Length: 230
Image (cartoon, rainbow, N blue to C red; front, side, top):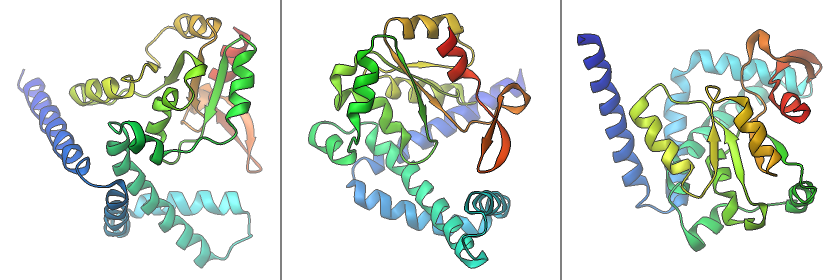
């Protein structure tokens, strides 16, 4: 009982901190939030030794000898700083409206998605896990002709915070699915010509399908091919 109470209090404290920070950030221009995020990223970077090793290793694999060690170190740091800035900006984009929202995002090659959707068979959309991906739940504001939009997401461990984030992500009509949901629901959504987004680089362990990625074998999510077959 004591452990459960302690967990609930921790969740409430985290949710209150998230709400307070988001409220402050939303009062500022998004450019200022981004600059602050870059500053915060620079402050945190020296403390993230484990993350530094992971980013540098991945860049070495991806660039395959085309950059020097110093260039890779700089790219790793720049990438981390940019991600922190994007994370803070996601708090602003979640509530942006009208002109403010349109200034945050520009959709390129929209005709590719529109043509795929026009076939009436549903669309499985593989997304990169980079940038301010929270903006993608608001895609209907830019392409209302697409109809039903959905996406897979990983529920947060903090139940209170998860409920709040989920409400924000679904505010514009995007339907979210988690690994706890039946695939029958997702298949039905696709059969109704829905569009389902899936993050392509989520860790899947031994459950995924073998693919070649930057010259190395790895396992990718089996969901895209599974849903296509269904």
